[in-house]
Length: 213
Length: 245
Image (cartoon, rainbow over all chains, first blue to last red; front, side):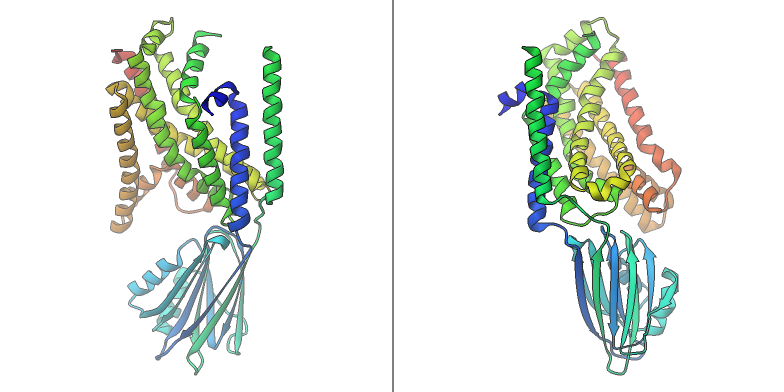
């Protein structure tokens, strides 16, 4: 291989390298590529006076639209933050002496989003903490059996929701996240691009040989 | 062909000789493209960083083992002695060595993964090509800093094994120092330490600029300044102190 590569020009070698890398990466992407949607469901048992349910959705690498339906909540508020980490938020709540239990975190790498839900044992305090993070908005139609949050997130943004339960003490979050603004070449487009590069490298090499003959 | 071009051509032929660099380029380019295709990265700066961060580690090792340690081979084989006998100033030879052993390999090794990523995610990144270019430039500066330091070590010790080992040690010490200073700064609440730790890795500052995080203009200057000082140190050493075996 070394002998063959020594005989071709650097430009030809680079075109072959780009073509091979493109084929390999597009094949991997075809089988384990990015997803355009993701969902997460969390049901929390929120017991005790003043307890609340907490849910945070972070757009880690992607941008998209998140829709969260909250069931079993008497009141719910949400706040959108630029930058941050949901697990860091949980640590900060603990640092504020809030009793955080039933923490459930999941990172959906293929959709570029992270979810964290938890039960927090001090509702009034957590509602007081929220304004420190950003401007707090009430969840639409909260107080009925179902509230809905619809937010557009940029990469790095977080939406955090805090809900106080109805008498049943069970709060459910249903999250649906749709990725927006992402498109990559399909495997066929990548193959076509790779083949074009390989043909161009052959033509370039042939022209070089012809010129030096 | 002028003398400078002649020296540059011979030196580049040594640094870019196949198949080592070809295999490295295929691996880093495929890895970078895989990293941005298994997750839906929509931000041009983030996509570039995801592809270039692992590439920078591979590049640093390449610059240490092929770029800088290769200079000691030039010295031991007597080729450097021939270079120095040409009617060229030592400063010019040092500059040629920096370009052929640091700047050009860095541009290629960082550029190829980015080209693959730009082809693969073209429809997503087309609107942010200038951001990709700025991120690429920040990685070039970072690589130029490492490469020039490694070259200085190689010219000083004139032993391939020692130069390779010392260069890798310098690289890991530098990156560890950046992390340690940043962490200490955050834990004790010292902004200056945190800023210094962050500024030691220029792409992080560029990312902070684009996402609108807190940064200081001085942070943007640290790595380019250190890289310039390292280049000056290589030239100075070559002119005033360097002796062939």
